[in-house]
Amino acid sequence: MARVCIVGAGFTGAVIGRELAEAGIPSLIVDERPHVAGNCHTERDAESGVMVHRYGPHIFHTDSERVWDYVRRFGTFEPYVNRVKTTVRGKVYSMPVNLHTINQFFDKAMSPDEARAFVASKSRTDIEDPQTFEEQAMKFVGEELYEAFFAGYTRKQWGMEPSMLPASILKRLPLRFNYDDNYFNHRFQGMPRDGYTPIVAAILDHPLIELRTGCRHEDLTEDFEHLFYSGPIDRYFHYDLGRLSYRTLDFEMIRATGDYQGTAVMNYPDSDVPFTRIAEHKHFAPWEAGRLEKTVAFREYSRACGPDDIPYYPINLVGGMDLLKAYQERAAQEKQVTFAGRLGTYQYLDMDVTIDRALDAAAAYLQQRVA
Ligand code: FAD
Ligand code: UDP
Image (cartoon, rainbow, N blue to C red; front, side, top):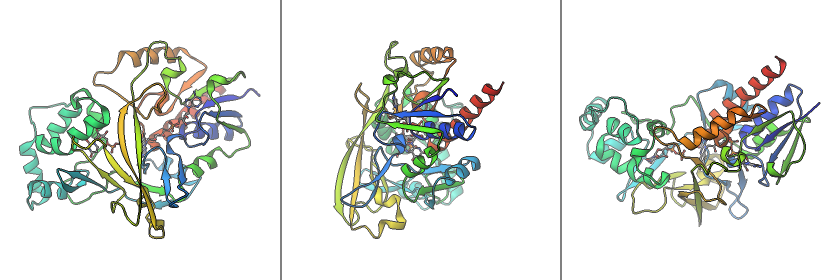
């Protein structure tokens, strides 16, 4: 039987390969990196013993029972609630913006209803249907909270004015008028006890899957009955219409003993601080953090992605982008290719959505193959 080729051994490629394998279809999965799990790759830091998220902190959260059941087939998840702090003008607040943040920032002791009315009095009621990040912020939190918590962070993270970015980016974050400081609204949340990489390795562990790491798609010479491509869509077309814009990240490592910052994630929205956040990874594993004497943290700097950098974040602009549309039109003509994942579809997808879409992509292929 002819094989299917899958480019990328992140969650997208692994889940698609597994679904096809369970339906009896063999695949070759290639990834140019020396490891599986894509950007979700984790490994133990030899010096400190801390489980490090190599490409930035990853917290698993979802509302989908299908996805939550799926990942727990392949590994154990420990309970974990993401609680982020943020340092603004020399003071520490709680993120996402909640009643504690509002009361501390405005130096008040308001009840939920009082705070709701207070924030509403500061919001821009003339904005009916916010399209941009800035409009969304001005409508829901008003100028002071926007300037303190969002404007500077967003300029650093995306390298452009929040008025050019879509409202959907801010809609990722809750705004609460109670003291709930959970960063996510989803029903299910957790951290893989042994990191993400063993989970992806377990998904890939099937006799009908051949995995080749350290292998670029461009270097393959075999023929395949279909290709699933989770690399960057513009790369597939050899960038011949031009390069799509991505943000890349630089991580600056900090080694220390004990506890460096007392929490997993500290954001830094102030514009005079060059990084966006510091993540101290032992706090992502509270069940083992107390046993570790040493610690490791990373300052995260965002910048425009060059040709030799890792593309992390696709940049979506308000109103869409002609270059992306042009690549998408060409992608639609490639009948033997399915573009998938954060890079293949050029979308800001969390892990749970990535897995959900990969399950759907595999199901669609299987259905079409039978028809
Ligand atoms: P990737 O993980 O990027 O995998 C694609 C793989 O394809 C890569 O390994 C790459 O090497 C390979 N590849 C590409 N082109 C080629 C080629 N031509 N030949 C061979 N191999 C190729 N999600 C959450 O749910 N929670 C979080 O807390 C969270 N935090 C994040 C933090 C950061 C800093 C970033 C950038 C993302 C975060 N995400 C988070 C999103 C998460 O990383 C993605 O949802 C997930 O990685 C998408 O998986 P993927 O398989 O589509 O892509
Ligand atoms: N954001 C912000 N201030 C913060 C945290 C986030 O302005 O303290 C904005 C920023 O534009 C970011 C977006 O909200 O890109 C989504 O935040 P999230 O924490 O989901 O970003 P990610 O973890 O995906 O980088």
